Image (cartoon, rainbow, N blue to C red; front, top):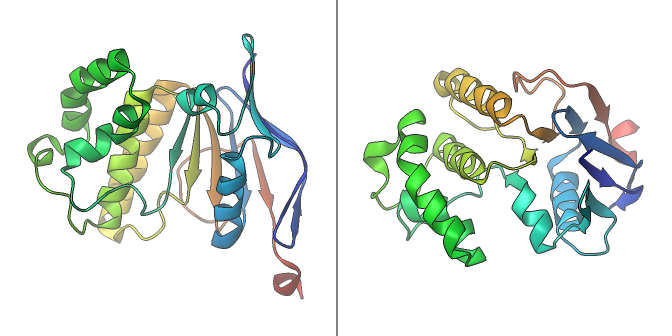
Length: 210
């Protein structure tokens, strides 16, 4: 059994109860953006109380094994303007420095790009891209990683209305194909992700509950 787990923790002025996501499950935490960022910060800090539980052992957040098996899709944070789309998509593999994984991802990229309809754009400089393209690049990375879990930060927020449905279908199809567990961080319970969540928990600061 593989689970993405977290201990009870304080996110600024909000107390988040302990929980987990099983491989293949989809859970949502509804919280304002600043709490999402704090969650992601803690997830990537060793000893912060977030870990991956597997048959091979437990891997703490921030560790190499954790990063290999948990992909992150961050809202509008997927590109470096001076790199090409190809380089942006492959960046996590280049940073990791594992030659076998770099070769595998490079060979798989053309088919991923074709499916996401960006094959002809791969060698363009990223520059200032739309929210939609940020989301597509993040999705391409997740497809190449084939992770056990995907932590998603408001993937659909800010995407132009005429492209939201297109991305929603791509995102849901990829999640189902990968069979990955999903922890979806959203600012709204009406985010229109298209996913069927087995649980949705909502957190608000003391100010917002008054």
